[in-house]
Image 1 (cartoon, rainbow, N blue to C red):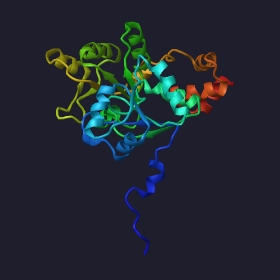
Image 2: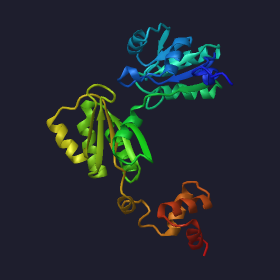
Image 3: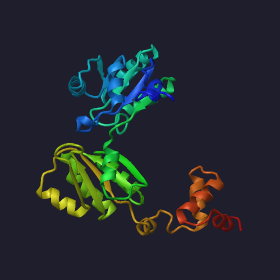
Image 4: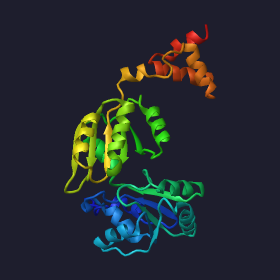
Amino acid sequence: MRNKEPRNAFHEDKNKIVGGTLYLVATPIGNLSDITERALKTLSEVDFIAAEDTRNTGKLLSYFGISKPMVSYFEHNKRERGEVILERLLGGESCALVTDAGTPAISDPGEDLVVLCAERGVTVTSVPGCSAVVNALALSALPTGRFSFEGFLSTNKNERSERLNEIKNDTRTTIFYEAPHKLLKTLEDILSVFGDRKISLCRELTKLNEEIIRTTISEAIKYYTENAPRGEYVLVIEGASKAIALENAFWRDMSIEEHVEYYISQEMKKMDAIKAVAKDRGVSKSEIYKVVNN
């Protein structure tokens, strides 16, 4: 009879820490019990850790009895520090990249470090775990099959308005991050562009005071006008209905020929333009092809 394999034996090779590799290590978004065995092993065995805030990560490491050299890597030093980290990786060291909470490189400066490593041929691998985006989506009671993550909206008024208008006709569930002091203004801006829709507002996810409010955008504005927002929020918003998307479509007043020419003017090949028009209008590409080739 074959001996039973020890737990995790199948994954020993994959879990081995390899020099010259950047490990994207997800950390808890609130509940420390959510950290994985693999994350703890990686943090314990890499040569050094790059952290968004070394003080916060220091507390996490201390809680789990891990002592490891750290360097700071955040939005305002990512260019200079990214090159330093890259050189150490090219020199054969291993590094774990962590953000304050959740998965690094998602709405996070770690994105730039991943690009830098990819350009220089440095191996990057993920140690998966918590993500506020996925948790909030799962709890939202809104459609989860197709969604768009927008991160934080710009604080620039014009850029903010432009972005909201670009995505207002998207039929997918849309997710934003927002800070408490900007929440009301963001909700008001979204309402003015999107109209009133269902929304799920998630805060303190996985923590003792976890709160999920499922309501409409207008009702959320009323609630937070009377109740001061607290904590970081994930906003999960219902996508545009097909009827609204069609009503607001940029091509609504175009003929089929004009619609195809528009995409060609965007440097699309003719057949690709025909496919795009067919998708926009919800018809077969052969139908569009007949019209433009008569």
